[in-house]
Image (cartoon, rainbow, N blue to C red; front, side, top):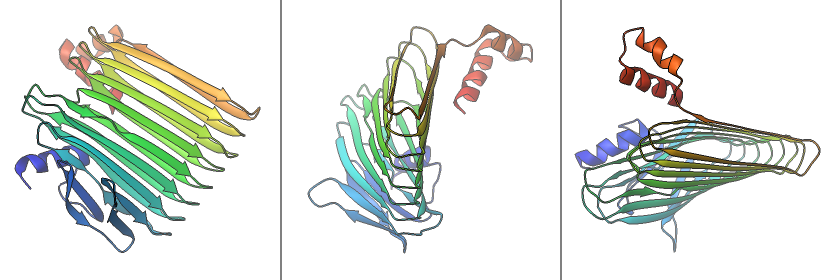
Length: 304
């Protein structure tokens, strides 16, 4: 791999060496792959993408599936399906890094479907990052679909680091009885960037629960939109929290929707959008920071 490849991979996976199974995709093609005793990765037939099979009762294994784009003008669409066996416990590290120094747009659209068997547990981390000095845009549109059987748990962390001109992130989940879905996203936009998040969670089984947290910072002339829908069809619990800091000429829209179809459904939505409080800046500036430094410290802490 070239130096730029390694740089992008480190940005989106926080690692230079991968333990466990992995599949690395570059400019629309798989370039490296490793399977293990408990995790098998198979190339799809008739579609771009892979199937990942995690054996039942697998304990604390890990798989990396990063995507990098270094060629301007690439439009990559990939379909990845994850089959998580009964009582398996696995961490999945995904994400996409785009380097674009030219005038054509580079785009990656990843469609990921997760099928969790009874008692399965997944931690899924997805980071997006863009860089380059070209006028061509860096576009990312991930879609995640999750189906959870009885007693399974899914934890999802999504981060948009910087440099992404436009993204529409869609997550849909169906939860059966005694399941728990935790989603956390962090987004920062600047210039004229656009970021839209759509969450739709259906709490179908008794004692299903979800907690969705979105934290974002919109600066300069960027725009963000957060849409969420939680549907309670049984005795269940759902909590959605959307917090955003807005600066300069940016725009943030939050559109919450909670639907209770059962008297035992307990659904909550909280949303807050505002600028950095003046007293926070003043307190840090009395400690010797400039206004710009104080502002950056507050943003770093908010997105931590």
